[in-house]
Image 1 (tube, rainbow, N blue to C red):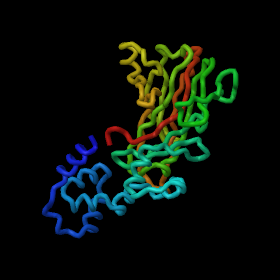
Image 2 (cartoon, rainbow, N blue to C red):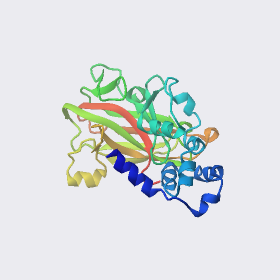
Image 3 (tube, one colour):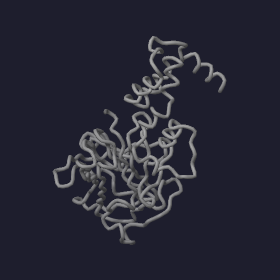
Length: 279
């Protein structure tokens, strides 16, 4: 199978191109202004382009400026391209294990997940309402399990300076249900995303995937299952437009405080922030 793939790869790369007369460093500089996906496509143009597109110069441009501080010193990579894809597939724990960091494979944009320990959970420190447990499939050491409560409110904050500039992001609450999760059926949860100190953009979501058609039309959003077997639902979008000197503090929230339904069995892993699908 590997020999077949290798053969197909060689067949895709042309022997020559009208641009092959350009110096390799010139081609590399041109490719560095594209995206990781484009660099992989360009590599199929010709052998000269393949060599240029694989260069460390190109792939270092796709890495975040602080990449050296993110990579464990014990790890050694053959090339910047290998390092790039390692950061795409490996979720690195940062800030004492309360956040995880990785790169979007297609765009190279920064992605972050705030753990339940890094967000504000109403009554989260009260043992009769919430329990902090260890779940093997979670990224973090502890997650928050809702025991029994009639007031659901979580809030997380992120500064745009830790994200990629000029990028539209989506924020998702990541959770799962255990032990006869109840209290979220037909209950609208208000989700909000916006700059701190300004009016947030809000929408109604359902934390129960079994919501019926009528309620779905009213609440518009319901959770979907992820590849890692957790559930997620989008809270909203925001734009990371500035640099470090013009950064914004973004608050993301999900709350149900009006109907006072008693709720239980929800496990919160955190809030994930990644580039919006429609960039």
